[in-house]
Amino acid sequence: MRFNRRPFAAVLLVLGIGVASVADAVDITGAGATFPYPVYAKWAEAYKAKTGSGMNYQSIGSGGGIKQIKAKTVDFGASDMPLKPEDLQAAGLMQFPAIIGGVVPVVNIEGVAPGAMKFTGPVLADIYLGKIKKWNEKPIADLNPSVKLPDELITVVRRSDGSGTTFIWTDYLSKVSPEWKQKVGASTAVAWPEGVGGKGNEGVAAYVQRIKGAIGYVEYAYAKRNKMAHGAVQNKEGHFAQPDDDSFQAAAAYADWKNAPGFYQILTDQPGKTSWPITGASFILMHQKQDKPQTAVEVLKFFDWALKNGQKMAAELDYVPMPDGVVKVIADAWKAQLKDASGKPIL
Image: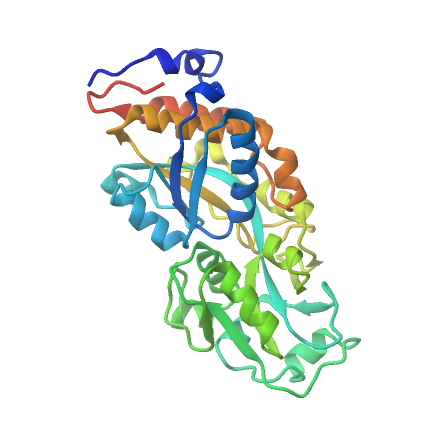
């Protein structure tokens, strides 16, 4: 396939990707995970102001993002559940991590402030298994002697759509609860033993805010933005960690991106006294063989710019940007894996 190389002049500089001028503005489309949506929206706004190019992202859940990229209805997909190397190969896809964040339990209990409640993984699993029915039952009360717990039923809220946030949550529960692992397991969609379903992080947050006595799980940016009462969670070292970019970074420090085939890394239940135990990365999916190489380069321009210039915006929303060394590894993967229809690298 032959195509005009002129717009790629900036791409060939340094590591290969330059920001287009406003005159060369090209819009790109993506769909998938709701977990990173707040930071992707922020990046898109800043990038459009800088370049004139828009990034239109549908926050539909990781399951939808995987389906849409496989169907080639978007330029990139996004998933918080990394695809295994063999699944990437079977679908002709490559993936790379774009951002790291944390999933947090959120509650609607009168008088309970953010961070005041304490949970262990097994207690969270038993709540979601339907074994703990009321807020003042002994397993919760023993962890929270200074919190006034009501004698009221717990309403479990979970995702109704295919969700990478659900994958992170259920992967964590599977690691800390043998019963959860056996009966439910970890995936973007599971057979929930309990609860009402909300669509997206937005839907879960809305349900928890409306239902007295509710508990749910959302990406931390949603909890913070909506001033929801999140809980502290006991980590692998026995410390009750609070969610923030430092505790997410502490967990992410154990990732070995350079040696992970297909960037396959799961960051739940990591060691470290300050690590947040329900940490996860969000991934971008692209076809290795690009029918529209110029459009693919525009996608890479956006993420190259975001990974290098979007750190402050990410930190403001309590996400962890990818370290500089990892950004270089990602760029090398783009060069090696993304090709046009004739098999030539697009960069």
